Amino acid sequence: MKHSPRIRTVVSCTALVVALGAGAAACGSDDHPLSAKPYDAAGQISFKGLAEDSKKQTKVDPDKPLEITSEGDGRITDVTATDASGRYVAGELAADGSRWHSTSPLAAGAHYTVRVSTEDEDGAPGRKVVGFDTSTPKTKRLLTVEFGPKAGRYGVGQPVTAELSDPVKDKAARAIVERALRVDSTPAVDGAWHWVDDKTLHYRPKEYWPAHATLTAHSNLAGVRIGDRLWGGDAKPVKITTGDSLIALTDAATHSMKVYRNGQDIKQIPVTTGKPGFDTRNGVKVVLGKEALVRMRGTSIGIAEGSSDSYDLEVRYATRVTWSGEYVHAAPWSTGSQGYANVSHGCTGMSTENAEWFFNTFNEGDIVKVVNSDGKTMDAFGNGFGDWNVAWKDWREGSALVAGSPDLPNPAQRARLRPESA
Image (cartoon, rainbow, N blue to C red; front, side, top):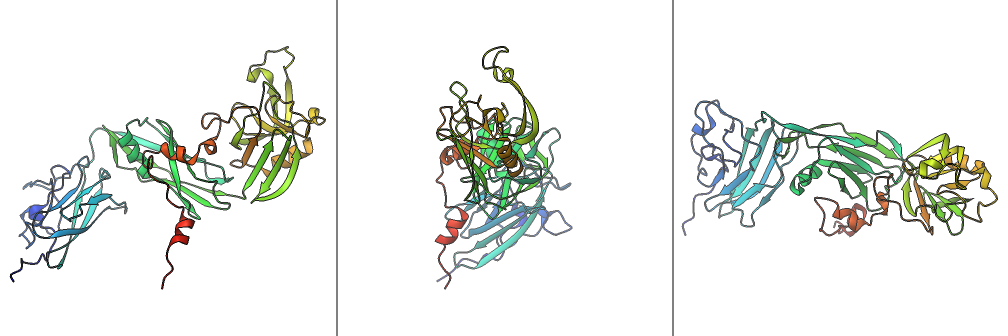
């Protein structure tokens, strides 16, 4: 039985083509790469799109996708494309091995190395490594990213934020941005980005962050084309850590607060919450900051001066949970009602001693949750961090990448499902 010649090499520079626009690729020779002598597999594998230029090597257009095809009896078995910083180009390989194409954009002004593996109909392997450079657009806008919060230690409820310098509305462009923004955690937990608006993303896991975790937010967007004349710029990474898991659970119906540290009930505090018409918001809130002394006035929440509900007070040990002025604070004027009735204008009041303890114990990112109030639920965005009031399924729907896809087991669950080694 007669067999076809085996493919001994993967790519011949005589057939280098990448649907990247005009340009040339370096194959390790001093001569122009397109004038190199063909290898045996020259007609089998091609990089679609690269055209010959006999005068000089030109850089390829990063706006075009990378495409590799097998035109003979051989098949492509694997393709790896990376830039000089180690970023991988995502791609899809046809089931029959006839074609591979990139599914993520190339970066501008970058050098790429492409490694292609093949086999012929007898299973004989072949391999070739090819390099090329991408051009930099003459006119472009850079999309910069600012991660938050600033470096430091936070509670387990602190979302990671990303503020973009330009609005991104197109779904495909959002997917490009989101794919390049990463949050790595130790221990590992799965999370997702959620587009709050065209310029703001928040990242959180399904449950609160683990206690004593390390989180690093960083971007691989530099040099990547996002849209018309819009390219990714540099972004400064941010590293934060979490402390103990601190959760204050306030029950407006029983007028009490229970504080949990790492799951253990450590303190119960009599409190008063919002009276009818000024009901405290239900749901999860995240501590935004602390003020040892703050002036609180009824006019700030729409109460007219001189009315029966008007007030102007200097308040001590105020722990802020909304930007609109909801605090956990000392309320020595209402100690007779604490534990018995709700008489505040929306804040959670307690004795000065208990407020001082709370103030010294809780920090940014720690959790304050209110249940059984007649108030509405804390807004997810715009008045602080109400992110945890969004159901996980709905949170994932706010992602340009995972919306509509099934939720996978978290890393710990995947480890338990992994078969034991023999």
